[in-house]
Image 1 (cartoon, rainbow, N blue to C red):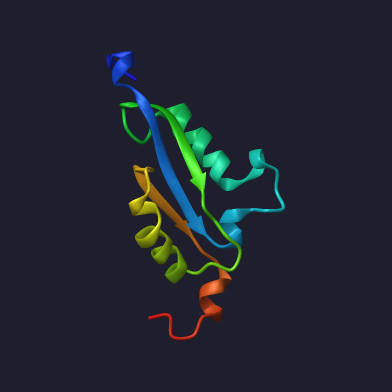
Image 2: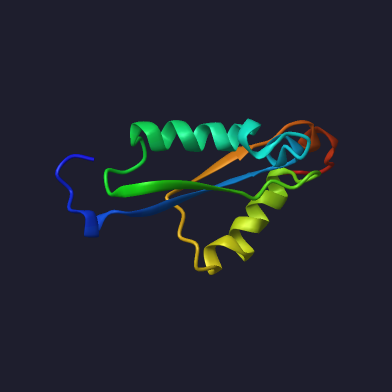
Length: 102
């Protein structure tokens, strides 16, 4: 963390969006890709030198598509108290099943 004073350090959030591939319902919390990325980013201080702690908020929901993730960002996340440093978006097959996505 370099020479940053402790009072300037903060918790930094990242929001993970996607369908079941992000939700990872069948895995334990420590086995999910979001948990593993959170640990790697925290261990190596890869987001921001002012971040004391990295928190990935898993907002994955089975069945969601890129369009529903965009709606989630527009209608909920940007209006909430959460001010994420970044978004991770990881989608799978749900977008292939969606008609008229664009």
